[in-house]
Image (cartoon, rainbow, N blue to C red; front, side, top):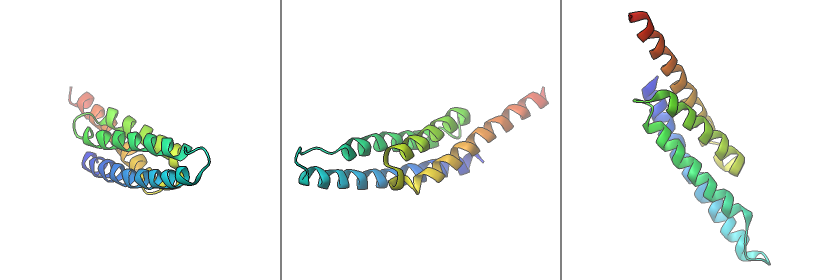
Length: 117
């Protein structure tokens, strides 16, 4: 399950980066045509980039520290969904399922170490 959470975390993070870049593009177009020259979508795109990077880091930690990895991926999935909603539609389930798998694998590992002793 740890390898699956690794793959889902990295794929979800990369998909989130794609959605974040799309949100930044939409925000730039909105800012270009607005009277104030700014757009809140740009800030949301920047936050979604940070959440996507957090998901990639969480996926990378899934082999060594699965509990921390699971928490990072779940936070990244929910944060990205709040920031750009439909732009995170591919990344959200990947990061959420990867995070749940990482937490489950950490609990299975704890049970195995307790049973051995």
